[in-house]
Length: 273
Image (cartoon, rainbow, N blue to C red; front, side, top):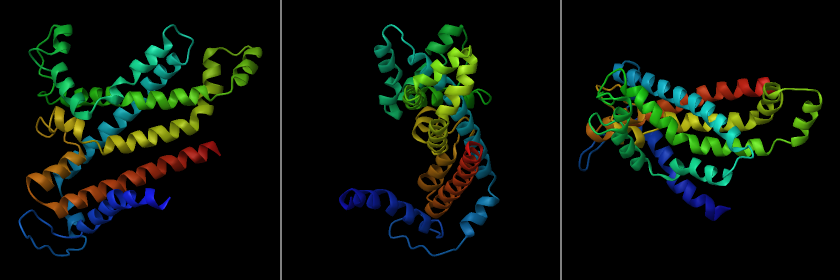
């Protein structure tokens, strides 16, 4: 396995360790720039940075909303695709189309959907709303895009879990006269619990670290209303040149995400046991 681990160490573990080390320095942009070790100063500055906390709040709203709604819609779609429908194979292929699209293409496509003059959404509703420029509508509009783009992989995973549920269990409860809702609540959900825990955990991590989709669609606007933590880190590093501070932001976000994820997994395992 060593040859396979070498690129992982070079392109994943190596940059991660370098980023953690960079978070404790005052590294800045500039040719032949010299930076010094500043200890936890970057993290102390983060605690008093209102822009950071605003972006983190937006990031949590985004991640929780997209992950939760994405799961519910994907579960419904997976149950539908698990039925003996006509053209079921074609429907399954169409359901994963967004998964195959690059994030940049998805962002550009949704910019056209939300376009105030020529957008398909305004054409359907008969309105002229500038969805991405409205302070109250920009974040919900971005959340809708996130749900649409992330549903395919969640649907595929849940569909695989549904197909792994033994049919004998359904046959047994049908003999007892159980209805559709009882079969779903007592058989389907308990059997899917490990799959649900795994995919929702991964979705949350992917969503809290999202960058490309939102950057292409809004670049964090209007007025920072869709500025996720990774967009804020990008601005600090590549717009203002504060590499050490941006690295600290990434490390802090990673620690909080791991803590939230740890609590969630612990509760799920405790309920399962």
